[in-house]
Image (cartoon, rainbow, N blue to C red; front, top):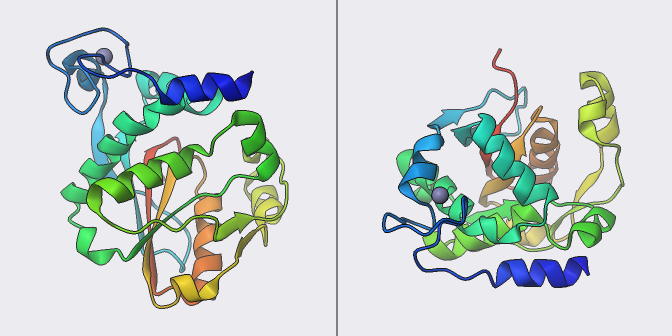
Length: 222
Ligand SMILES: [Zn+2]
């Protein structure tokens, strides 16, 4: 049933329909109406991460009340079709920061098989696939994987989070990433620990540089 629902969501009709509020409008631009666009707060901001393995990480939008609803719909309510408008928003950051020429390969946060099977899709993979196609950069699939089923990060403190995630990601085919500059896509950065751990694994497997990009971030600014 869940599966059928997500297929339906992927086939969501287009043309003059805002993907976010589902109203029809003449002011649709990249699947979003003018009213919804006004409710989004663009920042294209750098996020502070404590990791020597990540070159720089950005997020596109402030995690305001509207963004929270969108994230909830996208991640938990099966609205997989949102990858299109959200991918478009993230491409704005890539253009704004002028990093297209600094990227050889796009990768995304893996989700554990069990979780993905339940949801029917990996939300970061949908974003990465769409963005890669739009900006004409290759996307790596199924190479960076999650090998342990970890506890939900938001129920743990910083130390427990590090311990929970350590060695839980793995690169399967080192030759695909060797010497490459990688853009790692995530939907939301909460603590940054997941992105730090993935970057560590990529650098350990001889990636040259890792850039991060998330749609939004709920990480406290320190
Ligand atoms: Zn709208």
